[in-house]
Length: 65
Image 1: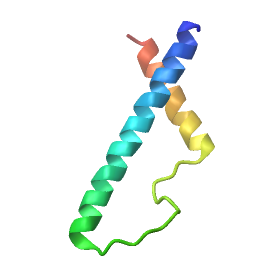
Image 2 (image 1 turned 90 degrees about the horizontal axis):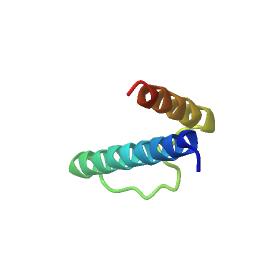
Image 3 (image 1 turned 45 degrees about the vertical axis):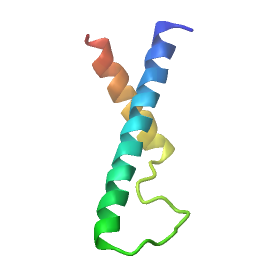
């Protein structure tokens, strides 16, 4: 695996972790203020283009190090 592929994989993992933490925070705050409503549609779901842009931003910021 090339260094760029490693960076991309690491960036994807970081984004996934951040999204998961954000979702957990949202769930915690929602539980404090709202009744639980099971909904299969995620509120914070990113489009593929948005995910690609975030990956590129992270890869570019990692290249600076």
